[in-house]
Image (cartoon, rainbow, N blue to C red):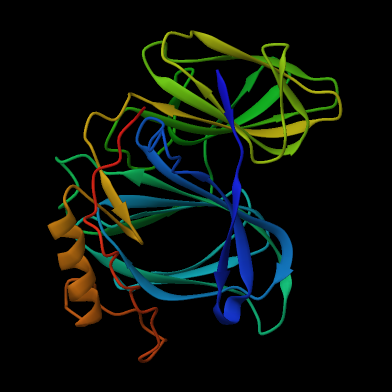
Amino acid sequence: MTIYQPREVPLGGVRAMSVRRTLPLRDRPTVGAWCFLDRFGPQHTRMRVEPHPHTGLQTVTWPLAGEIRHRDSLGSDVVLRPGQLNLMTSGHGISHSEHSLGDGETLLDAVQLWVALPDSARACSPAFETHPELPGLVIDDASVTVILGELAGVRSPATAFTPIVGAQAQLPPGGRASVPLQADWEHGVVLLSGDVEVDGRDSLAKDDLLYLEPGRARVELSTASGATVLVLGGEPFPEPIVMWWNFVGRTHEEIAQAREEWEERSERFGTVPGHGDVRIPAPPLPTVRLLPRSRR
């Protein structure tokens, strides 16, 4: 087991927001198909993430506090609240925006994750779904919500393209839970709030990720003051991926093409209603060739 700590990433611009990023890691680009994990908040801020593109991935937005308005090039326009899930499948290409409600600062806290799409799905048509209610179960002292995929026989209604799990477990003060795992999958445990001890020996700080190698049938969680924990996992992702900016692909040329089409305002990414010409420009490509991320 290895503990990975998040790093602070400034988003800058008029949003004046920063996030704590746990995935991707230098030596571990994916946990299952999970390839990206950002936590923003809790903070009082005015969130303005203007229209920007995605390819080759799903965005999983899971708010913990506050409300987020999502708009996209498919015409979706929804307000997301804690306990609800937004899942956007970019496929060949989509663009979207995310704003906090109102003109002033407000309390926001959320996790956004990306799931890498396999070759069989990454060129699919884009899609968006929102789930105001998700299935839950009780495991010992923990109340568990299954966000994506399946845990202990309970499956989320959200669309998944690979064998995967994303679940939130809430433990009361003094609580314990023995969470079953798919033994041939890899997993990660992320502390969102409170305190947690894993297997009676590993204590996590907030937003730390504890990586669990395949071969485990369960993970033991315990807390003194109470905890909210994410359990992420899946079948080890078999395909090498190239990640840059908001794109997940397989080659440098594929990423460069997506960037060029976004800058040229190609129909590939559509337009997000209500923003006029406002959009986030793509940064320059690095001067070196983009290479697939590999495990060490």
